[in-house]
Image (tube, rainbow, N blue to C red; front, side):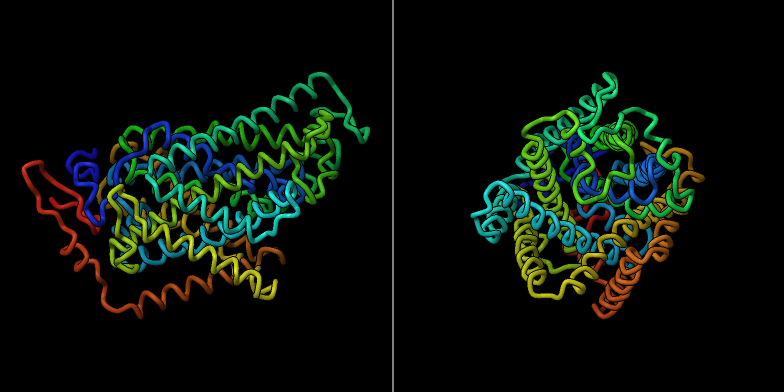
Length: 484
């Protein structure tokens, strides 16, 4: 439990100290909103086209695997809620190379996703104000999200709370609207009858068989990408021992409601084969209701989802860079915090990296940038796999702790097998194969970079950042180690 080891017990003016400013309410809504983004609103159409109605099984299986990942991360975070989270856990339990690769792979993943979110926001805002140049939206979006992250971690938490509340309300409203349509037996504008029979009447429940369900996993799992951001919030939670378990334990009903429930309702409203992927599958709910402002309503929801995701990504990259710097795996300046405990150099670097990445997106040939973007697909599963392996090593060495992951060790091994299986499935499809090869290439580059970096600086960082044990007992060093 965080007592003398809590950053809040040290001066917030210390140059490398984060401040505990996230309440339990903030942490719960960060968890609630972290996996609800454009991946759900638009990615679901691609998953449906691969598996048909049986995609619901894909969401259930992926949700269960992700829950095991988060329980593993939760046990480590409750035991040691320090900066850098899973990057530092990989370093502590698997070694310096694992920590370096995990941390930087996550940074690359989130940066590419952030570029996609900024691009999406530019398109969505341009739908309402087409006369405004796209670069204006890019500058305004990056400036606003950077400012929100520089003020105070509590401002970030409060912003995410309200944005997540809007997203959750919108999804619940769409589900309720769909259920009303089903209960009343209304027909769609195209004349198709609504009803649960649509789950099996158009080629069967699994029109492409088990292989279609397996292929859909390569799309489905990425809808949950970013959920690991919750682990990074532990270092700044006022009461991580209470907040983290509460937030993680909401994952099962979130999966059932927001993914299985929402996608299930959509599949009942019309034959799955009519979902082309050219627009969001959720548009059908609004079209069926006949809401005149359907396009504008959906546009507002997706703008909220994309901005919320970008806000969380800026937070997560900044905290991961702070943690990497603390353990000597990134420039030391990234560990600097201002008087409010915000790692301002790291957050500022996120803004610079976004601008550079967006410029590269414009000047690079489309195929080259698609290859770079595919790193995010590989990195998402890779980071989850490293969390599971770190947890395995911790449990073997230290035994079970508070908020112990369930079904140990069988559940953990099944989740690891699931992640390895998804990585293997990336090689099976023409559309996903570049994600595997590009991801492996990025992994090799990171391994070489770590080896060329020189001697490991963990011991130096620990000596420089260590705070001697005082009357209050053990403390956490700036390098993230607990002194005994």
